Image (cartoon, helix red, strand yellow):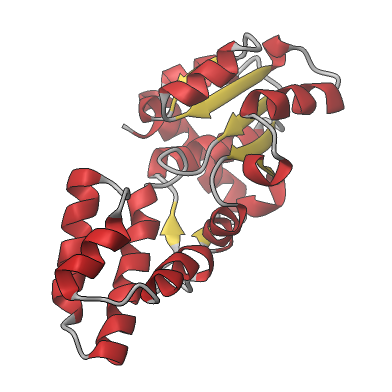
Length: 219
């Protein structure tokens, strides 16, 4: 019964995501990034900002909601650059709180689990049914990326994932892609990379790997 439900979901997925299926049907491995590929990066960061604001309210008796709204607005309009500095100026926070801000990015226990994009979940399930190998090659702080993985609702898919942290290995993504190919006796024609930006695409093209932008799957 569970298998039947899974096959029905995959059938629905294929109706609206033929591009992903066409790209992956003749591949043996599919390689993903995490942020804005499998789930929205903001789903993690906004929860980190919520926890930081609550911490500041507890220690400094400053209004948490105002801090949350400021962090959210700055992030959505200007990104993560200098976000602590802007917040500390706005609310008069001591520099010592930078440590708490940074550590929450690495080890926050989120109020809510991270949810995969719906179509991405169905794509992953399709890959498992088709017995294709699934890899995650992710850039960024390894502790933070691991924390995201641990707090993602994988719907049982976690046992099919092999993860590489580029920063921990001190290797480029293209080097890790090549290692995956070598370790599995595969050629560049056997792999598909799913990413979210030009850098991911460039790293894929260095090895002539097929590349699919993630928005084509979860749009």
